[in-house]
Image 1 (cartoon, rainbow, N blue to C red):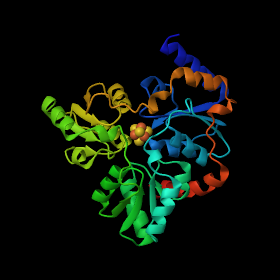
Image 2: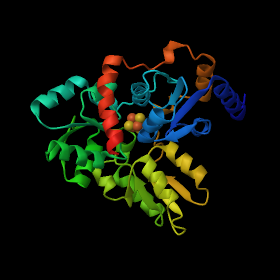
Image 3: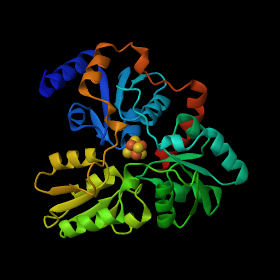
Length: 314
Ligand code: SF4
């Protein structure tokens, strides 16, 4: 069966069963093409919260994203096409570690990146995404009347937030990182600048500071998308420092411009564990509990507060 035929079957099954498909920008392009909504973590959190009026949500993203959708939609079935699609960054921080940090730094608010487990979110005061981390940190530090926050699990996003907000971020832990973004080096950027001297360099805040400092623009995947969308006629070429899926998306949407990945093989293999066959299987077997992501209600009740607070503040 061709990709096109599979996509058509999925679209028919989706309509018949009244299922909604959410896909992250880092998903393979053929999955993005059959999704009802495409976005970054914040956009998809909002969508799962506001726009889903179906009983079943298929979430083509990593585990913590499906968990967030489950927390926000306790009455719905959230299904993940491949339950092995996990975010290694989220694994850097456990709820026990957060409790320990809180005991060592009493009175400081806990900001956790949405790239964290539901149990970690349940221990936090507020969640953030790479789109809103600076704003959220500024707001929560004002609310607690403090000049420092506990921030995890991404130490690079924490560092970027500290740079932008001037609010100290105590990293939970110091080594938390995304293996995709943190592998981009200054050497990669220098090569890119030499090869494509006219190109604008856009990088994600999960990149290390030395790389961010060389960029023309630092922003989340959604912000990068919008930066390209709003670019002038003269800006025809871009070097993109984020996962390859976004580059595929923008190359399709903005065909008059040229895009180069900041480094070869910037691929989140965890995000790429989904495929059209698995989505078709789910649509034909909606009651197969193996693929359902259900956050236990006692954790969901505690984790929903920091998520809703984030949605209110962003
Ligand atoms: S790109 Fe990085 S942060 Fe995003 S899911 Fe993959 S490992 Fe996790």
